[in-house]
Amino acid sequence: MFIKLQTERLDIRPLDAFDAAFILKLLNTPGWLQFIGDKEVHDLVDALGYIRWISEKDGFFYHVVRTQEDYEPIGVVTLLYRDNQEHPDIGFAFLPEFFGKGYAFEAVSAYMNALCAKLPDLILQAIVMPANHRSVRLIEKLGFIFYERFLEAADELDIYRLKGQHR
Image (cartoon, rainbow, N blue to C red; front, side, top):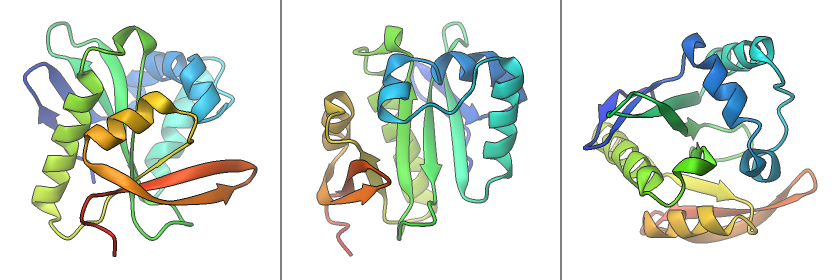
């Protein structure tokens, strides 16, 4: 579900074509390539194609996180209804220069709170590679607990669900 939000330091809005340069940069960071995968986005045309693909995909909601101070895009928060999963997956990715400043926690918590206010029965999960220790720590700080491990293609992935949501 698309939601527009503001926190003390951040502005969170749905992804659009004006975010192409940012998406190009984000999708080519080492963390994205290692833990999410190469989406073959190598120039602005590819970035626009990726944004178009995301916007046309049912159940994929990408939000760009910007600082309120200068409106600079620093990351994304996503909600993905995947065909192979019973419940939607909340995700996030930030540019490395913004790691360790609390932005991801602030953005994801605000988005989760807004989602739960609108859809109180929604069961949220987070899917992560076990080796992505930074994301696992954040997921656990947000109140998710390990639910199960599964294999997708050749990747081992862990599913975390919000504490108390083990249906």
